[in-house]
Length: 603
Image (cartoon, rainbow, N blue to C red; front, side, top):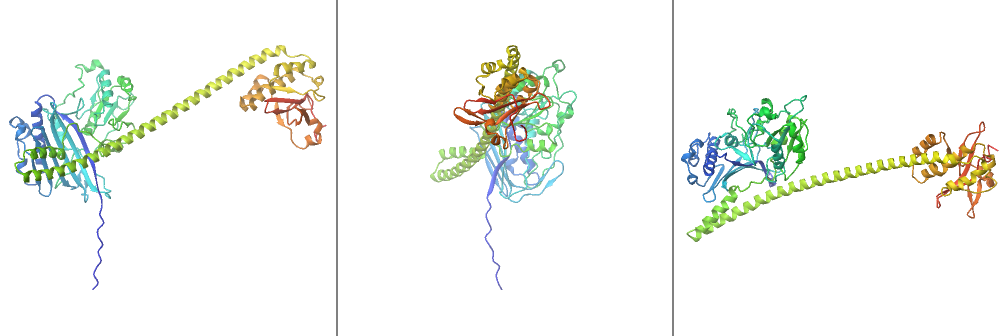
């Protein structure tokens, strides 16, 4: 019986990228910094116990509730590690006031707030990182989800905000802030021009890691509410063994956002505050972006600060490492949803002085090596430290790669903006030059017209005066070869012939030199002379049949009179001026006027 042949399974590379990310500072002054740190840790343990509610809760997670933080000291927390089908690592550094957590779990699918369910994705691992550090009297917080999945994974990964963040924001003894602004559910209304200037400065601050949404007060005839957003993925519902159902919203008393301070009598200030429906629509953006409401009377302050806007705009300002500002006005709910919730993915967020597990383990192992009582312990800790250093190096390498990508994107964006600005500037300069040239030509035309009207007073009245007049007035523009074909005595209308010679010397010659266009030449004919002069080439066999009529001697050479000005016909007085153009001297050379030379059809 033949045996089946089996081929080796091909290896697939895993890709690792950050998903949800948030850097914030905890505390509102109601507790000491260390008690704030303790309360944050107790909230995290409470959140972990909720995650383990369908399992036997490990004894390491049993501790008082956040409300009992007064009875707990930071020294009570210890480092530990659990690895029973999932991996939970907690590192607590007493001297550095660092508490950090890493939870690694396979994807178990997700239940979204609208009830939609997503099946688990094979090979996808969620790494949850939560860290707190008391540094310089501030409790800095870092929240980061890292996804590891096969490179051929096509199923999208939702960007979940941890329910823990909601709990910290709603705790009236803690709260979270980013920069000078509290994280909350309602848009922060800018109550003064100074507030708008402060916001513009914050939007340019390199320390800002959250995108900002600026709702600009619409005109009275516009709807007061910006497009609603319907985030289906507003909670972290991806859990170890089963999805956590969405909890009903916790109703709290309104909290005045700090800063900026709200004037006591807002009606006297006349500020715009988004209505209840608008504020409700933006609640779900908490933890994804900072949302501000800008009264229209402060638009100038924000525009001066580098963020131009107009009534009704909805600006989305990315952090400075990207620097992009997008106007979401007119975008659909789905587009706004995707833009805000997916923003943290693959972004190089900086976490201040926060230490996540890998970095904290290096510090912890360094202390253990220094205090090792035996060589065996020291070597064991040293090997662990080497592994931690390697992991930390790989993490930093990924973070640096993301930052390089973001910087390249910003550089390319700025270069594109500069190139567009330069192209626009060049086009504006061309338009200015063209307009200036048009005005200049118009001024020259009017000057010429005025000069023409003045010159008519000195025009000859008799045919025998024409030769001297033409030589004096147009000696640099045209030359008349004296000969038996120049018959001044045959000129019937002296003024008409003067117009014809002036036309050739000025408008027609200017057109040959590219000084005026065909349209300008024809317009001058109509406006200046009140008639049309036609210049056409001499073609056909006529110049050969009547060779002597159409050829003249010029500078010792025979030249063909290859052009002629025509006006009139047999039925009325006519004028014909035969000439050629000397390109070298830029002269019109006239060899015959005013009569019609013989042709094969006219004699």
